[in-house]
Length: 474
Image (cartoon, rainbow, N blue to C red; front, side, top):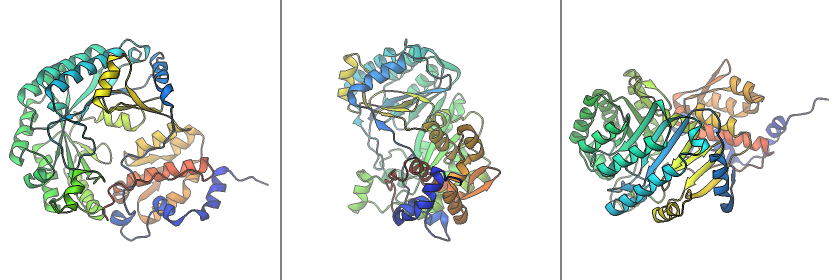
């Protein structure tokens, strides 16, 4: 008599699963999957949690990594600048208002932190292919501190010849002197959080400069022709009608920007935006179902303009834009963190650096890496990270992953795949899963459902679903 596999036993016994959990995994019964396949977005980024490393073991684990050469694969660096001149209403990442004395002191410590690990075997053993200077608002730094930081990167990080160095920026405080400092230092990619070109929409979310100034500055940067220029556009904001959204995307194309992100507004529980809406100071943001239609329209406009799609949300006009850092970090490659509030990953271990800037600086002065949190990888994390990375590209090579990891992935996932096929969220052909436009909008839900499903099989149904219900606007 043939024995049933763990996967088959779990699938057979899944009838006892609560209805609410089934909805998060399989989706809703609907004739309109683009708008109503799920009640809300489950998470911001799909993930599988490992085990929290005890605080007393964190630095020991970090030092052990630094004494090893590590795998020979592409690597990235994330450097966090925790300052902003103003606070945008929608932002969930604000840390500190800009203060010149604090800025100088922070950059001193950040340079020290870069230097602390520079001679370790790990840092010397393999070149770094992508550096992302994010925030916060890196462009809020003074010219002198921009120059000091970039110089320290070159002195302490073994950059690959074809490295990508991104400098995240806002237009308001980013004058020609700062642009020149970046270019002189080797920055070859600028990322601007435009969010919308519409002046009314921009003002309501806390952006300062109007449409005319934004377009002028982008035209200037494109005329320099010495770095990739990338912008973020966001859909679903207050006062942003479909006409406004179409004009936003069309403007990106008319300026011939090298690349762009089209992404959904998330309304966080503790955000100033939600507070403003509740007080009646702003109209409500678009419902999730309305955002879905805006997503589809953005895709149509970008495809018509023949922009190349690099991921679900990211597009490139030419070969200058590679989106390398984002692709590496989302696919589980080594990402070494520096700066207060930075996060990274090595060999599946997830790291977060102390977010409190004063605590961060004190610990740097004490000569230690100021890590505040570390999580060990779950079993089979390599399979999970490949699923996350591929789904972010809008497809999944199920046959290849099954062969690589010695599992029958299509059989294990069959109840999900059959439900999603029936709902019009995916197509299947020759071992490949492809996301439809509706599936692309809901890809974080589909990806998280796959991860949770595989974890439930592994744990005989004892794994709890990862549900945060982000952007649940109805």
